[in-house]
Length: 262
Image (cartoon, rainbow, N blue to C red):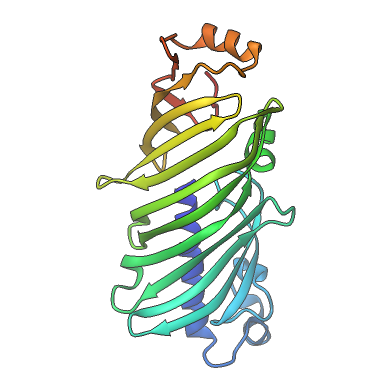
């Protein structure tokens, strides 16, 4: 997923650079269309008529998120100082299942080698975008509390990442999952590291994952704890599927995001 977010931020940066060069001063996309007509690339048709270096929108973009449908990208000039230019970037879909915001800074000098993003926050409806298309009985909204990092635009890689969030109103098969919290970061060799915990509902969970941003299969370790409120059907399934321990059940050594089953 994060690799696609990187792609989205690079698209925005490319658009801003291109519009900055082509639409200096008060120019807008409508002016370019009047002058260039069919000579403009096909993707530019999705740009709003008033799109310019200061603000604009690119509609119905696909492939930016690992799950969900097309989204709209919006950008707004947010400031300039001696270190670079900053934009507020928003990502949203028509159904209201995705609503994300982030600050994107293009530093002077370092340019595409050090694109900084910060104050990432927003909501993704995991039930609508991820679980439902896969037939999973999961509902809930992923709340991104804080996301920040640096992207090397020339290599299309994350140089640093730190993200925290939680799952609001999370339910699986109709049962309350309680407080679900997550933290995601990257290490020096380009792998992501994640921590997930759940408690206060029918599920007690502590897990750590490690993987690469360009792969759906990741290494996993952790444990599902015994919980007196756990549905009996869940307990039977776990007994059949996972190794039993004194405190609960050991998680499998790896998992696939595209087929998350035990």
